[in-house]
Image (cartoon, rainbow, N blue to C red; front, top):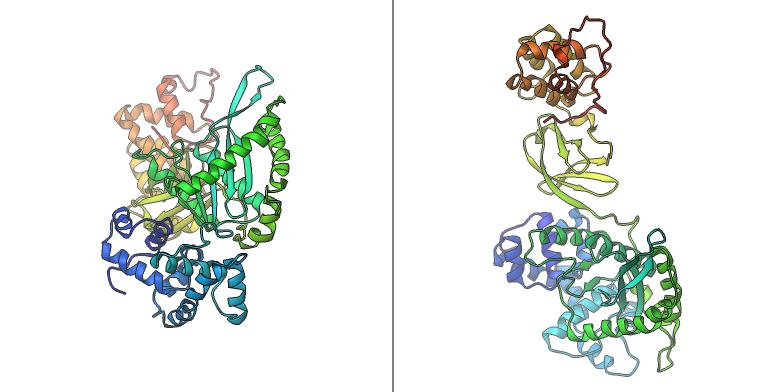
Length: 512
């Protein structure tokens, strides 16, 4: 295809940006690529039978295949559908007709035709190009509007008697007006994401787009932290297969719908439960849940069902299925693979191994409460269970240079030879320190730290410190450092006096 080719992760980003409604020019600016490249990919999108959400659900290999094909079969299928657009437009003007009904008729005649989401997506694109107005504002399962109420609820802290103010999250499916409400401590990213997770689980499915109002408390425009937040939200969207843009404001008609929902929440949930006292956030949310059942079961004023009945009858079936597992917020940071073939994660003060060929390179660490993943240029190179025990090394044997070859002369003999210049006890201590690990690389950094103490202490003192430390069960950099700092190496080792082993806690991998 024309224009420069982009890698698979950039392609996913491009699709996500277009799904969010950004212009080609804005996408090119955000991604740092040529405008013509974006134009060529967007042109290819229009030839496909898949909408943006469906493209994002494809595996990398399938996505690459899509953009390597000539699209002839898809073109023919689209031409068959496009011939129906005028008919669809006319039918939608008739009372009671919906796109769902028309799609069912279409798929009966064309079993290999487009899925409902693709069917509506193509018709919507045609409608926009032809300036057609119709019943397209609120397609079933397409969008979920979310916001925080302007007013707060409270519960009482039993221990202090203090009233604790909490934020109230509201989500509305505009097609059925089915509503979800939950109280949380704040509007911060973690609480906002937790609300979305609970909401989607409660709905039992996923819309194609989650549309918040401009949540300034969650995203600070122009802040240096904004890119991190956007990346977290994008990760949430990829996990659930939907788009989520925290900076997109509602359109006027959308805002009116959500404001109406918030007003009704004030009347039918806030007011009744404010007559009661709650002593925990959980109690408050239980009361909200009870009132929410009543709220969604209220009959509409025209008498044609309730929010719940409309949701079950017309919308639930068009939500995407929930993914396996529950989303856990993913955090991002950069790191460099050290000579030990590990990368340091400061949050837990732990080390995680990477394949030795990445030593010295900058990598991205992505982690949640359970796992740590390490990426180099968008390729995952390591996966670990997260460890919360500070100072530990989480290691895969195949990652280690010692499993393959020496790296830049960092091997036990290298450190023992340097230690021998200080003295025999230093050599023995360094040898024992490195030997206590399954993978010698883990001990190299501590050995380097001990040898580096010659900048602050004489070789004689280091030798005496190592001699004393050889009597201890474990070896570590911190043991030698503490002996020297407290001048315990100067004490007569053979005076017969009891001495106290310097506390070193767990073996630490870093030194200062």
